[in-house]
Each structure stands twice: as C-alpha cells, then as structure tokens.
Image (cartoon, rainbow, N blue to C red; front, side):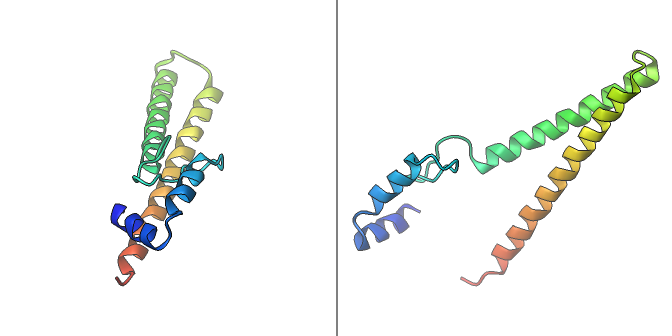
Length: 112
C-alpha cells in the first residue's frame, strides 16, 4: 500500500496532506493514514466484538433455561427474552458472515 501512496505522491504531491485531512475529519469513519494505520477500532475488531457478544448472549440464554428447568427462577418472561436476544444475535451474525463470504467471492472473481 505504501508503494501505491508513493506512486500517487509522485503524480500529486499534495496527496499526503489530503489523506491526513481525511483522518482528522469527524465523519464517523476511520480513514487510513498514509502509513496504512487506522485510529480507533477496525472492522476486524468490530466483528470480533460482535462475535463475542453473540456468544455471551447464547451462554446467558442457555444458563437462563437451565435455571428455569432447575426451578431456580420462575420468571419465564425473562428467559424467553434472553432466548430471543440470543436468537436475534445469532441470525445477525449469520447474515454478516454471508455478506462477507459474498464479498470475498466477488473479489475472487475479479480479474487482475
């Protein structure tokens, strides 16, 4: 990536200034700096956090069902809410996985 930036800087010497301005703007999107680093969290970090959250929801729902069966709690409403939350987070993660796989397949189809 640095070789590409270097090539463009030969064509346009102000490229580095524009890239640093992009990283300083508060657009909510973390633009990469000239060195290829991003400030804040990356897509990978967000994906990893979402996976961990979905896993935690599954564990909590499982524990809630076990508690209901064992008679430790009689709150079936809370158990059903946790089950629905876990189900929704799992379905969301499956859709994200499908979209990532579709994007990967499209990139692999591109001719270089």
